[in-house]
Structures are given as structure tokens and as C-alpha cells.
Length: 270
Ligand SMILES: CSCCC(=O)C(=O)COP(=O)(O)O
Ligand SMILES: [Mg+2]
Image 1 (spheres, rainbow, N blue to C red):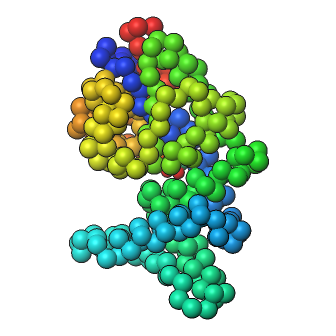
Image 2: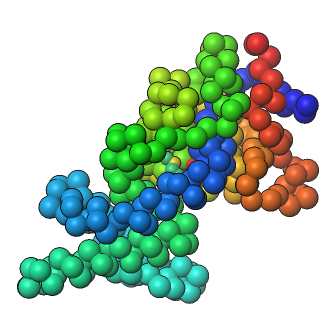
Image 3: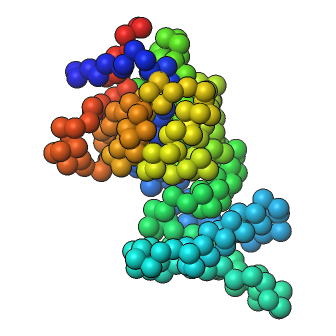
């Protein structure tokens, strides 16, 4: 077994979810299809609720920003098929169906591009809430995750999550897992409200928020663009290789510390 030593200055382990703690297959085959299959009915049932209206407003604002403020050079790559969400205009019944269909189309479009926007993630989190609460879904974690997190905490480490999934959705996953409610193992959560995972400034803000130096953090992720952004902020990184993850280039394999299980991390204090 390959062992990666955790530098002595590390006091915080920051974990990505999809592809790191949790199989991509669980996200792609369970979480995301649930959204696609239920979004229309969810909107029809919850439309008048404030939470749902806030989600729709955020989606509307986000697509408007995308359509009208994005630099021209990026347009082709990002805007193909983008669906604006209309405001109500007169006939209440027609308007409602038109708006709901636009939100459904917008959600499908964003999901087909695996967009990680705060607006999409917020709506998804609210939709999963009911499914987890009713016991219709349980989150999957790789077998090495929970034992390792327990060991790290016993060794005095703090453990945080940084995922594109909303904080609310993250808490649902850890609160309703096949291992039971493991939310208490996590010291705190970050999502894209602090910034995108491919931007190094996000990692500086996370360190500030935790109250540590970026060099006190070890970030574990499956995505090398995220690892590179974190490293630029002086965060230690290891790239997690799990079944079903995207492949790495030879250069990436050489450059990064790679682990296939959290048990491959060696903490000097244990
Ligand atoms: C609470 S995570 C749900 C999965 C999800 O929506 C997602 O975007 C995961 O992205 P990650 O940053 O964890 O790779
Ligand atoms: Mg990931």
C-alpha cells in the first residue's frame, strides 16, 4: 500500500464529496435522476412557498447574468441552449405553466452540462430534503471514509467539507447515510457561496473562516483543477482516485500525491 504522509503543520482536513467521499455513481445514478424525475411535480406542489420562490428567483437571476454579462468570448461554450425564466405577465394560469416549464428546462439544461451553479445546487438541496427525510434515499460513502474520519478526529484533526453541493444538501447526505447519521463527525461545511472550487481565492476564504492558515489545510479531491487552485493558495492537496472517477493524465499522476483510500494517509501523530 502506498502511504502519503500528512505534513506536520496540517490541522484541518477538507473533503470534497463526489468522487472523494462518495461514489460518482451515487450522485449520477441516484441523486441527479431524482431531480430530473421530480422537478416538475416539485415545482407544481411547492410553487407558492417562499423557499421555492427564492430558488426560482436565484435561477432566473443566474441565467440572466449568464446571458447578458458573460464576456463574448465565453458565450459559445456556455450559452448553447441556456433557458431564461420569464416573469409573470398577465394570464395567471398560462404564466404559471410557462414559468414552471422554463424552470424545468433550465434545470435540465444545467444538469446536462453538469453545471455547479449555486442556484441549481440550492434547488436540488431543497428537493432532496423531502426524499432523505422520508427515507427514500440514503447517501453512500466509500467504506474507508467513516473509519478514517473518526481516526483523524481522535488524532485532533478538524474535518470540513467543501463541495459544489449546497451546505444544506451536504448535511442531508451526512445526516442520512448508509452508515447512519454521521453529521457530528464534520466540523463545518462550505459550498460555492464562498466561491468556486477552481478558484484559489475560495481556499483563502475557507482558511479565514476556519481561523487557520491555508498551509494548515489538506484538501482531498478527485478533480485536479480544484487541487491546482487549492495548491495555488498554499493548501496541501492529495488527489483521490476512486472507481468511476475521471482518468488522470500521466503528468497529473506524476505531479500529485495520489490516494485510492483515506487509509493511505499517514498522520505523524497517530
Ligand atoms: C451534497 S453533494 C451532492 C452532489 C452534487 O450536487 C455535487 O455537485 C457534488 O460536487 P463535488 O464538489 O462534491 O464534487
Ligand atoms: Mg468531486
